[in-house]
Image 1: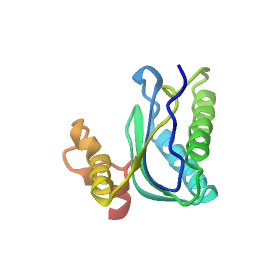
Image 2: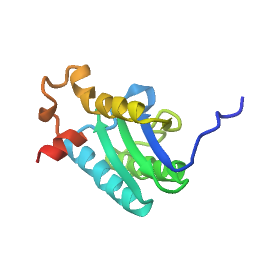
Image 3: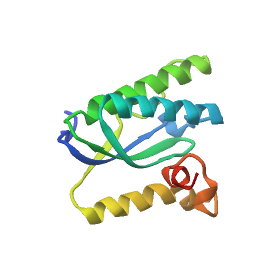
Length: 145
């Protein structure tokens, strides 16, 4: 069965990637920090605008805006670089991510704001924290620094 067509035109995207078998992909603070450092590089290199993000233990959510049709290349690069880091650090091999990343094109402002709120409230939804400002690996926390 062929892969589903992926929209790549410039615009707003909700991107998600989850660890294979729902395994954790962030095991300690350095892992979160490394992912964010790589993400900053990708953001710069691919001219992405980040509106919201949240790194959970076994997946991440990112709300980004692209100005060029490069969403697939950017996200593939991010996942690949982080996989190399993770596999080397933990002396493992094989896939880290469960398939390709998922990307959902956002067509209007209502959808944009709904997704932004969903992303930033994710740690509360799964009872990791009671107050969003307590969770350091998401964009709302960054704004409060």
